[in-house]
Image (cartoon, rainbow, N blue to C red; front, top):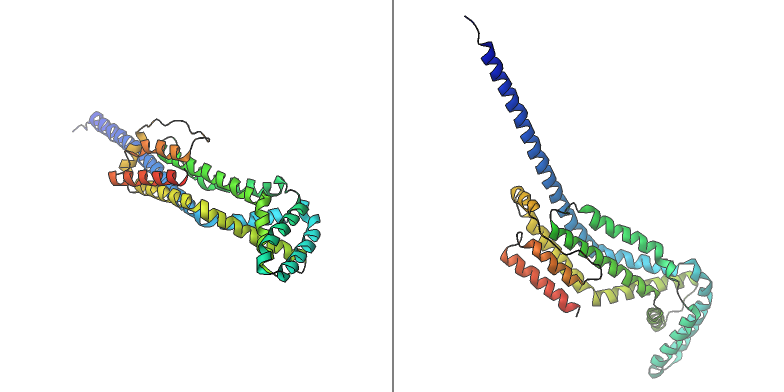
Length: 300
């Protein structure tokens, strides 16, 4: 009996071809799934990083920024004069009647400001650069969204610019002598004579950081809260999608206007909303719109 060698060879070749073909398909599927998993991990990381900025950014930054300003070498020579004048002011303040104390505070703080003259902007530059790097690391480098998820990328970039603006604002608080006037008034009101220059520096740091926190809490916390809500809403909406749905969303192209740093944050969030129509439910989109409107009202 003759074996059908040709038929056997053909069948073997067919099986081998199918095996290679199926291997390619599996590889492509696994590669595609891996890319989606990487995006999901990045979304989780982005959400966590924005929450961390909200929680830690000001607390860490303000004390460091106050210290980098007050302990700068360029200011060290004036502290003995400030210490002497400040202690004299505290003693005189204690001896005055309550009616005269308010007027004295203004005069005394102006004298102390004149001793400083001006604060060089360079004193906090290294810290600002380091903080800029931190913001960039936390937000920009954790986002493999572009160009697949245009809305997410737009929101991330908007958050990035917002924190840069806040960084410059908080830095300006340390450099503005009007704020130092408030600090000196508060120290005089405490009526505690300072023993030496180191105690003076420490006291200035505490009061300057506290003033930054007060200004930030009054003017910026509401905006930061809304930004965190927007990020949570968008990230949770993406993370609720199956890998199959995310693959479809990656293929969809939404044309967004180029980001201009001079544009308002409201305009950026509104522009990003175009890309979210395929992602958000009606209720989620309404919530998103309400957050943006609230943000706009806070900044009118």
